[in-house]
Length: 147
Image (cartoon, rainbow, N blue to C red; front, side):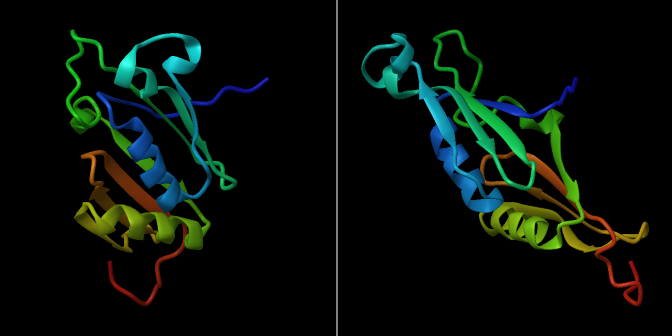
């Protein structure tokens, strides 16, 4: 038996675009189910994402959906992402550096990805949707480079 915890981001109407962006950064292909495919929503709402999944060969799982209910407090991006940080960690340097570069390209680097005191490479970035990410590459720091 197993259990896993995966981030699930909620958007007012941008889940499909966000999943496409994250796929370009993390790899994988988004699998999207719309409200319309289950008979919910009319007009443009039928094309909103009821459930979207991005699962990569590297074991990264990210989920997203649109919540366009009139009483929704969600803005165009995720709901108050300031309270949660997604931690992307591992030892596959190529995968993690590619993710970092993609997130940082259209985001805001908070802490540059560089040697950390604990011997890894570490950085923090807020992506184009305001989602906060920490990237930690195990053992990737050059021991001759001061942290």
